[in-house]
Every structure is written in C-alpha cells, then in structure tokens.
Image (tube, rainbow, N blue to C red):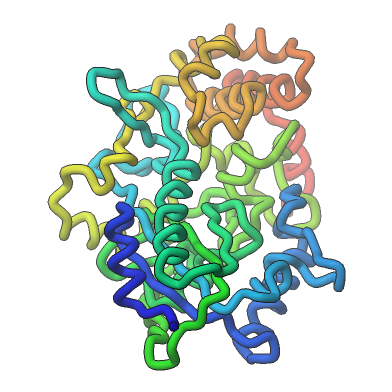
Length: 394
C-alpha cells in the first residue's frame, strides 16, 4: 500500500492541522537531490549559519545531515508535511505602536487555556508534535510496522523544501514558505516515513508567485536577505534568539555597513518584518474572517507590543514564570535583557538611562556591552563603529 494525498489531508485535519500533504524523497542521484545538497552546503560554507552548529552536523560520510533526508535516514521514502496557521488579526510590527513598546515575534505569542484557568504560555513544538504523533499512530494502524520520525523544527530536514514538493506553497524571497491562500504565518511539522507515494499522487510544486516584488528584501533593517537566501549572521531573529553574548555592530568581512544593533530596532525576540510587508500576507488577511486561526495557538495579548519598562522589570524568576514553556525561553534571561537594552537604546527615550547604566555594570558581557552601547546612543555620543565609519567615509 502507498500513501495518497487525500489520506494525508484527512489525517492532518483530524489532528487539528490546517493543511497536509505528502512528497516523495528524491532519489539520491536525482537532479533535485543534488541541487538541494549543493545549495545547503554552499550556504553553510559561506558562514551564513553563524553559530548554529547543529545545522553543520555531518554523517559518517561527511555529508551535511540537513542537505538530504537520506543522509540521516537511508530508509526514507516519503515526507508528510502538516501546516498549522498561527495568523491573527492583531497589529503588525511595522504598524504604529505605543511609545517604548517592544516587539516579540508573532509565533511566540501562543498560549493555551484550560477550563477555568488563566491563559498560559505554550510551546508550538510540543503542541504540534503531539498532533504529528497522532497521525503517526494512525499510519501504523493502517500500514503496520513502518519506519518513521516526527519533527517540528528539530529534525535534520529543511521542512519548507518538502512543503514545496508536497504542493503546499513556494519558497518566497524571504525564505519562508508562502501559500497563496494563507500567506506565510505557518508552522510546519513533518513525518519522515518508509512508505511509498504512488506516482500518480505526487503533487505539482506550487508556482513561485513572488514575481518582481522585493519588499521583504528592501524592508530588512540589517540587510540579511538577498533573493531566496538569508544570511543568519545578519538576521534579527538569529541575533535575538540564537546569538549568545555580544551582538556586534556589523558582521566582519560581509561588506555591510548597517549597525546590526540599530537594525534590531525594538525587536526583543525574533522578527516579523519580512513577513509583515509581504503582499501575500496582506491578501490572506483580507480574505479571512478572524476568530482564532488555531484555538491552541491563540495569542497572549500581554505579549503584543509589550512595554520595555515591564519586560525590564522582570526578575529571573518572573521571566521563568511568564515564559515557562514558551519559545521565548530560548533567548535565556541574560540574552533577553541584552535584547531589551538594545531596544531601549533604539527607543530614543531618556527614561531608560538609569536602567541601562545599571546593566552596564553587569558581569555578563553581552548585557553590559549592549547597555553601554545603548547609553552612548541615547546620550548622542558616537559609537566606535560610527566613528570608524566616519573616518573611512570619502
């Protein structure tokens, strides 16, 4: 027996997903497989993965694990891709906001609420993995013993590639999966299986509908994007989540002159700018009747344009309580305060100076460096990077 698109769509809906599809794993000698391997290897070799060493892991043959599903899983024949919609009617990061407001990426707003209880933070990884496991169990019931693995952002696979193969969307110029009806506010979960997909069930890849639009590239404050490629070392999401310690003014040797700290703006965890400006998200929002796109991914309203003052007042215990089980915990307490310091420096508000001067005395180098930079910025002094740029200007 083989997998069909209709079966996967049905199982995905039953499990609570918005969409589902299945793609065959290309033969290792195919052009598609070779192109994906070469593209990923070139991206890593260019240093664009930054400090995310898990993306650089290789198998015994030296092949990057994420360059091909067959590298870690030689038995893999198909990949089931499930989509969860986390869009909402709430403001965008580029919309007018209250003075001194921070921005937390939309995907990290999610919370859950049991009967009679206050809304609590939730981690979409665990929530969606539970749904994938339910689908996996149904497949085992129907097909018997099979090899399979379920992942939500944690496996050695580039999910959007297989989402494209499954006909669920195209890879946009901002490197996100774009669906013509839903836009890009989408979580992806995958099940890698040893099951075949019938040849007549293979989906046609979605057409690339980005056209000549470059709004995402033009809007990126840190110049992290070129068409269909993202340099993580300049990406605000990487800098505020994955990067540990000191955030540099610029990435050495990349030719960029943008001060990364200035580019971060008010983003304290992740960034939505390249998706906020995308016309496809505007079109998808206009065509929806918002209630809750996914009840288990409902936004916690306190995290929408939260005040920098409030976030800065959190003790480490407060941070743990507010973000226990939330993706925000990945930034860690010191990293989160470092991000707050940079956002304060970009706010132009003098009232943050006492807090920043206190943080400038911190033993944590990432926080103290960010706070010192923010104090200089608010006091109108040039930073070392500014001075260097002035000296080299024609």
